[in-house]
Image (cartoon, rainbow, N blue to C red; front, side, top):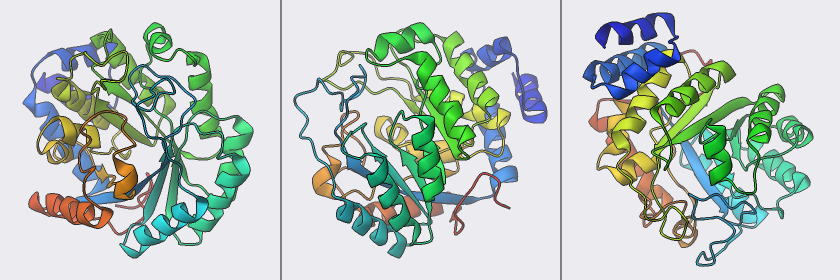
Length: 340
């Protein structure tokens, strides 16, 4: 396993069978080497991105997501444009260099509204990431032309049969098309997967990693599946932390210079999960700066970490975590190809 891990780090490529070998075998060296590669390519500074969850209204009906349109137990909300800008200003004042706008697929926020929001936020001299779902090429291009820098659209699984089963209103081929259209539009392109989905195999996880490499994604978010009680998958197992960590570490070896967040889901499912992820290849954290009155309503999964503290408190907590492992907070906007 050590030899195979070193090969991955040296050549930045593996066959599907080799990835499977790394996924199924115990290999503490994997995490140490992923951390070493992270240090070489990205340095010790951790990039903080201010997450603003601006609408929990969504037209999609994904079986694993608490925001699915068929879930009638959700208290729906939608921030006004002024509220979004106000939250962004507070993030900038708190020192954040990147703002992440994330929301359900809410038809209220049409292209004109999103472009207006982008232009206002970009006046703050920050990098801006959008995570608002499937759009047309023309819409992605409009967002990029308005000034947005990055776009995140997780594939969740590259197993077509499983994808279609979990996304009853969606189309696998269109998801792939959207990712390539995002890239074609000039965005730094982000994607990622859920680890531990019911019906997911080790082979499909290996295929996910190979897809990240093929796409040459700029940022990859990998999180353990956490079942939500108000979804069809509410009674499924959630012990997926270790496998999610493996997928993340292998991704770092194959795409050494990308940005990888230590996800909130990792912290939710395991105490100190974010710190463990930061020591296994991750270099980004996205503290949630959404107002407390909305935070608990953006429930992709239950018991979401830090949903009961405000943005200032969460920022302080995250910085202490970073400093506890002798890392620093980055001061740049954190593009993939920034000089370390």
